[in-house]
Amino acid sequence: MIAAVAATSAAALLAAPAALLLGHRALGRARNASRMAITTPNGVDEQGFVRIGGIEQWISVRGEDRANPVLLELHGGPGASTAIFGARTRSWERHFTVVRWDMRGTLKTLGRNGPEGTGELSFERLYADAVEVTDHVRARLGVDKVVLLGHSYGSALGLRLARAFPERYSAYVGTDQNIHDGGRDDSVHRALLARLRAAGKRRELAAVEALHPDERRWTARERATHAKLLATSDPLTLDTMKRTVMGSLWLSPRHSLRELRLFLRGMSLSEPVAQGTAGYDDWADGTDFALPFFVFQGEKDVLTSPELARRFFDDVRAPVKGFALIEECSHFAAFRRPERFLELLLTHVRPVATRASAHA
Image 1 (spheres, rainbow, N blue to C red):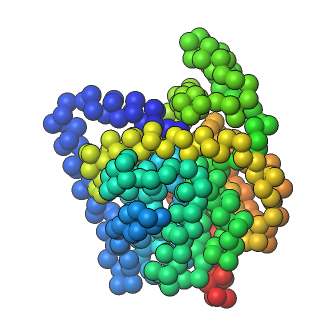
Image 2 (image 1 turned 60 degrees about the vertical axis):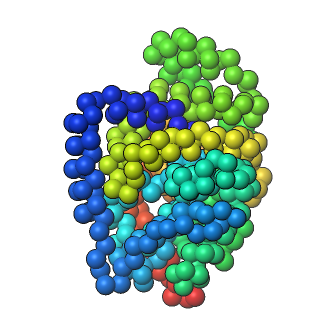
């Protein structure tokens, strides 16, 4: 979804003088490495490859206290690892054991296997991998349930996992919540057309107007181009892509320059995954969830509509549920304002996760 925007941001970074650029990167990575150090007696900081779905997949487990609730993240994209945000979300690890997983076709997992060793890239394959990762984490950390956190496209996986396996998860949290409705709602598309007209972007407007009226019939390339225009036509989203996403990858102490290119390559490689879910309908799949259910959405998200997320949330029946808008944020709200997102986790999610652990 964001590969083309990220590639543009990366090109801008690499256009600076090499010595200045690399010096800035070295200083930033050193600061972030120090910030990310976990030294508490009961802490955990493990990264490595685990055999999931027949291939080696990268999983990170980090937290200051193994007694804290476990938070399993499902990244978006598809193919957009959240592990690059480790320094930005360091405070989360004081209250949760945060598990991050590079799905097949994504960053470190892609680097390990290569495109030829990645295997099938489909929603169904990622879903099966996610179930296996969940059970691996539960066994590795000795817990019955984990909090399931779905980011963007990962929230499409998250909804279905939470609905199907409430015995594995203490709560579901969606952010940049991706809602499929069988193509009925076209508000995001219409808003894009309005922005392009207002900006006088005639060539881009013509390209969007030429798309088939039914988005379910778009090709993977058309879908990716539409997503690129959604992001680049909105100043807040574009700024977040450059500063929060590419800035985090550039200064991540755990990612190499080679992996910057892998990040972009993985998103391009994974485009067919989103293509396969274009006709999904979350309402038809069911709005009953047998676990606590939360959505924390950027109030100005132009990619995943907060209004559509709210409509779905209002129809959800769950033992406990909560919805909040993250102010002055578009997409990637959890990472643009990580302390606000943590406040929401501590207020709404950690209490129910702690109770679930106590009753296990």
